[in-house]
Amino acid sequence: MYAKTFGETTCGINGEEIIVEVDISNGLPAFELVGLPDASVRESRERVRAALKNSGYKFPMTRITVNLAPADFKKDGSGLDLPIAIGILCGSGQINAEAISDKVFVGELALDGGIREVSGILQMIIKAKEAGRKEIFIPPGNAAEGELVDGIEVFAPESLTKLAMHLEKTEKLAALSKRKMSIESNCVYNVDFSDVQGQLVAKRALEIAAAGGHNVRMVGAPGAGKTMLARRLPTILPPMTEEEALEVTKIYSIAGLLNRKQGLILERPFRSPHHTISHSALIGGGSIPKPGEVTLSHNGVLFLDELPEFSRMALEVLRQPLEDGFVTISRVQATLTFPATFILVSAENPCPCGFFGETDGVHECSCRIGDIERYHKKISGPLLDRIDIQIHVPRLEYKEMKADNRAECSADIRKRVISARELQLERLQGTGLHCNAEMSRREIKRKCHMTLQAEQLLQKAFLALGLSARSHDRIIKVAQTIADLDGSEVIDTVHLAEAIELRTISKG
Amino acid sequence: MHARATFGQWGEDEACRHLESHDYKIICRNYRCRMGEIDIIASKNAEIVFVEVKTRKTLKFGIPAEAVTKAKQTKIHATALHYLQDNHQYFKKFSFDVIEIVVEGDKFRLNHIPNCF
Image 1 (cartoon, rainbow over the protein chains, first blue to last red):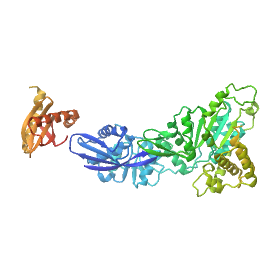
Image 2 (image 1 turned 30 degrees about the vertical axis):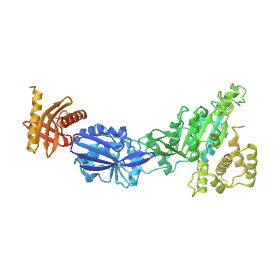
Image 3 (image 1 turned 90 degrees about the vertical axis):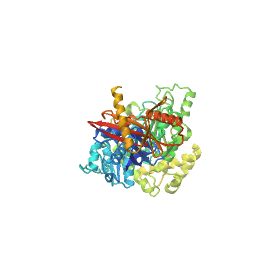
Image 4 (image 1 turned 90 degrees about the horizontal axis):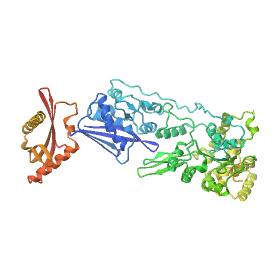
């Protein structure tokens, strides 16, 4: 007998519907699984068999053929256990065939018939809804994600028995109630900008970076507070929109990094990979590509501490996502595109010993010129060219450190950032862009207006500093953000001067 | 004969009876060669049928048909080939069947699975 059910798997960051066909015919006991299953799917045979037996059902001792359609792409993940089990129950007449039409099943089976959680549920539910299915059954461990999607009934049965009883209408399950996606809920960070004494230049630079979505590079002696500053950047970023939050949650769902209770991720991600990271861990990889750090920091911050210690390969692969906002990873199995729009924040020392250029009279750089050069050579020009804001973070003086005046707290800075972002959104309406850093030359020409004096200043700086065309554009973008923070409609000389200074300070 | 062998022999007798009552003609029983053994070779409508008989008293260790593993199947294939060559019957239509017999009290249940490997 033949039965057809629907399952789900993931492909990139999206769900993919799988039609699970089960045919039970006379013959020697055999279980054939076709349709490019990978190891975890092929092993489902043993789990399904034990789960059916231990739930009080019969595993038919005849020839069972299971086909996973479409047959041309590789299926992975254990979430297909449940549709296979339901298909077998249906094909052997143990449950009613009509009971399963238009329903989708996802879940890994435990040997006792329990249903275990799988990763990537959120996109599967979204996909099932798009495909017009009426009901989806997910593991109870993934219930938090099930509450997020409207327009489809989501059930989270604990076990195969409960699910079968629901399908047979002997004991109905209650559908999960929908949770309102409340973006407003205030995320609590356990760090704050008021913890940082002094460092006004760096704080200002980070505020500008947050307001315009610009990349930042911090150079300074060890212990100056670069890492401390970077960790506080997410606290002043504007809250995510519903669309952004859903995107981030989808990425974390597929990576299996989602907090099971939380559901939607509301905080902007902050990722700080160790400098020994490989290039494929950074941009994503694997025989079926999985998202890397750049994708995990999508809509958030990617912090690279000790930038010159990263392998050259790892740094160079960053160039393309920094420019495009996405990465495309090609492997034999699949070619996938992951979003990767993030603010890059990097920290480094001016030389291997860390004290080059220190003027306090106590520390002296002990590095040879060649060592310093080699240290800096690690970071290529094209990469530096993509970093809009480059600042020097000096060591604090004793007076500054012990100062009593409380520094400004994150909430206040964030208010200014949010109003600057609102101005940008208004100006960029219709372009599909969100912040100044995303502007291309075309938008800069059309949307950014400068006073005459500012124009003259830019011309002088271009000649004197030998700027590239890209640097020129980037300076205007940063100047625009500074003007936005100021609430000014046009870019004035002060805005432009600050932007030029932020770009060139580390070179001088 | 050993008790277990007698039991198997009894199962094969029952299988033969079943086949004959369904218009099969028994050609040979317990055909042996160096590759292995075939329990029953029968024919019906110009088709030659190689039958493996499995008899069980209990289902505690799985159903009888489960015991016809891949290795056993390969063995039967080889033996069947040997038989066909030995008897100069190259172009015959043929099939491999399994007959499983489960004893339940004084009665038994017989299941004939035709053309199954």
